[in-house]
Image (cartoon, rainbow over all chains, first blue to last red):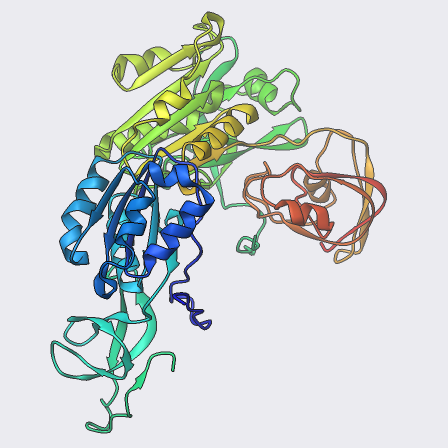
Length: 202
Length: 328
C-alpha cells in the first residue's frame, strides 16, 4: 500500500490531497516512485486527460515496476529520468513554454512534490492551484538550520546532518521556498546527549 | 469566512477636501477632482482603492463609494469619475447637479478591496462602462514599474466611452475598445488563451460580465486566485421594516428607500462600515432573533451563512417579516 495518512500537525506542514481531473489547456504531471499509482488512478477517472498530458517520471528504487504501465496510459509525452535533479531542466523548459490554463499534478514523495511545486510557483502558478498526492516513502527533505545544507531522504529523527555533522531534530516546520523541513540541533544545551534515533512515524 | 478586523470607529478616517475641478466627460460621466482643504498632500493609495464620498444632500447624509482613478503617485489630488444614475438613490445625481468647484466635502481614507496582485507577470484588465475607473489608476501604476498589461474595454458607444481617446492615444497597442452599438464583443476565450503563466485578470463592470469572466476563466483552467473582480452594490429599496438593536436597546424603523445601515446610523447608533457596497465585510452583524425572510444581497457571506439566518450585512441586505433582533 503506497498511501500513508500523515497525523495532523502544525499549520506549516504541507497537507496532500487526491489528484482529480481539472479543466485546463495543458496538463503537466510530475511523479516519482509509487507516485505512478496516483497517475494510473487518475487515468481511471479520465483517460483522455492523460492522453493529452506530459508526464515526467522518476522511478527511483521502483525501477521498471511502473514505467510500462504509465506508457500504456498513452500520454502525449512521457519522460523517464534517473533523478529529480536530472529532470529539472526539462521541467523548467516545459514551464517556460507554458501558458495560463496549465494544470499541474504532483504525486509521490514529499521531496519531489515540494521541489516541483517550487518550480511551478516560480513560473507564476499559485501553490494553492497545484494538486498533490502523497505516495510511497515518508522520507523527508530537511534543511539544517545551522549550516543551511540540505539532506535528502531523511528517515530517522534525530539524524546527522550530511553537511556539518550536527545531530538534528526533524521539525514539522516546513519552508515552501526551500521545499524542505527544518532540522534543528538536538543537543545544543547538552552536547553529546542525543536521543536514540527512531524511524519517522514508527 | 471570518469577520474583518474590527475598528474602534465606524468607517475609515476622514479627510476634508475642496472640489478643485469638475470635468464633464460625456452625457453620463463627470470627473471630480479634490485637493485637501488643509493644503497638505493626500495619503498615498494603492491602485484599485476606493474612497467613500460624504454628501450633505439637504440635511440627508449620503455615503457613496467611488474608485480613485487618479495616478496613485500624485498625492496632490484625488480624482473620481461618477456615472449619473437617474434611477438610483440620488447620490450620483447630487454629485452631477449640485457639486461645483470650490465646494467643501469629506472623503474617507482610501480602502482597497480590488488590489493588483503584484506577483503577477502580466495583468489583463476587462472593463465594462464606468468599470474603467480603477483601471486608470492601475495602468498608471504598472506603467511606472514597467509591468506588462493590456486593457479590454467595452462601452455602449463612442460618445459614452469615457477616457477612450485618452487611453487609445497614449497606449495604442495595449488598449482594445469594443462598442456595443457596433456589435463589437470582447473575445474572452481567445484572449484568455495563450496568456503567459503568472497572468492575472481583473474585471470591473456589470454583474453579468463579472460572472462571465469568472466562469470562462475557470473553464479554461485559470486558478481562482488569478481572477479578480469588484462590484459595488447600491442598496436597493424595499418594504419598510422594524428592527430591534438589542445592545443599544432601541427599536428602529428602516424606511423604503434607505438601507438598514443608514437607518442604524440615522438613529445615532455607531455601526462599523467601509465599502457600503456588500464587498468588504466590515459591517457584518450577528442576528439574535428573526421571524421572517432575509433578502441577502452582499458578496461577503457565503451561501451557508446566508441560509443560516445568523448574520446580515446591513449595508445592502434587507428583511421582510415580523421580528428582527440584531446584536448591535
